Amino acid sequence: MIQIADSMSRLGTETAFEVLGRARQLEAQGRHIVHLEIGEPDFDTPANIRAAGKQALDNGHTHYGPSAGLPELRQAIAAEIERTRGTAVTPEQVVVTPGGKPIIFFSLLALVNPGDEVIYPNPGFPIYASVINWVGAKAVALPIREAADFSIDIDELASLVTARTKLLILNSPANPTGGVLDETLLGRIGELAREHDFMILADEIYSRIIYDQTHASLLSVPGMADRLILLDGFSKTYAMTGWRLGYGVMPEEVAFWVGRLMTNSNSCTASFTQLAGVEALQGPQDEVGKMVAEFKRRRDFIVEGLNAIEGITCRKPQGAFYVFPNITALGRSSKQLETYFLEECGVATLTGTSFGELGEGYIRLSYANSIDNLQLALERIQDGVQQL
Image (cartoon, rainbow, N blue to C red; front, top):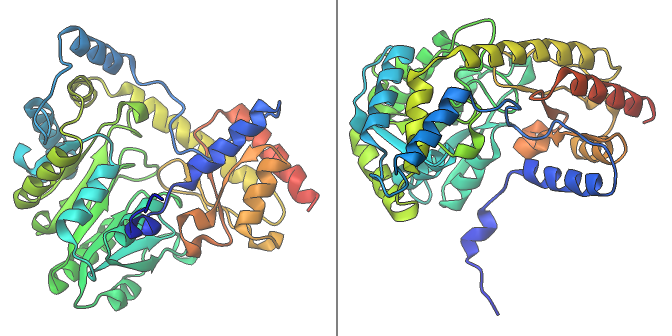
């Protein structure tokens, strides 16, 4: 009999892929499903980036590269960070990975011992708590509340910090809420980190998908560069989810060990993908601007539509491409409504509890879909609510 390691019982998942699987089953039975469950831009990777990837393949960039990333991409990322965050970093502080998730994994593996405490946002991206638990640390939930416009209460955060706090995970703009942390709050969080000597993992994967304001980064806060790991990447900004290309920016000592973890796990990130990443950063940015403008149009459309449905209220998110409407007045649990909207209404959504127990009373919808499909989803949800 196969004996699975005990640690596997502590490893969670992303239920978005489970809902997607069930939705595909229904489609195979002839049902029409509107997909609002997956957090993926519905745009093509810009043509110049695709061309750069093809050229890299034709030029033979199909072999191993350095574990921490190709020098030209690490240099391009360092320049991009200085341009966007106003803080100079060296290529040696950059580690390139196949997607952003490895930076979450590697940061926890490199910094956290069993029994250490890691504070993470709840509701938040489910992989945070999953990996914290898997490495044997204590996951300490930081409530993200609608009443605070899905931001952070600094006093509540301070109350969670103990002598065993090793790491704080932040996400802005945030999945699933679309909440954004402002510069003043980030400054106070930085003071707290210095006072209590803990590191911060700042997940800024949606940094370019922000509306009505400019992105505020912890890396821009004076004195934070030596205790911060910044996570960013290409999946969301450049619609490159399948290319698997992300990166972390961190102190050189941490970068050494994260690079060693890359050697032991993935060896390296695909070279032709990295060269496409160089073009993404250094080439025209027009398509990014068009995509964000379209996401803003869809955001306004779906927020207005949800608020017009009796029993649902929805705040306007400031970033990413998700809405997190409050459905408590409908008198059903979040999971019940996820199932109902999929099975009875033909709309794939995610229960708020997919992002932590504090997501009860909410569902998440991705508006990375056309206006026509969003309109159809809203009509189906409204009809479904009326029949509850």
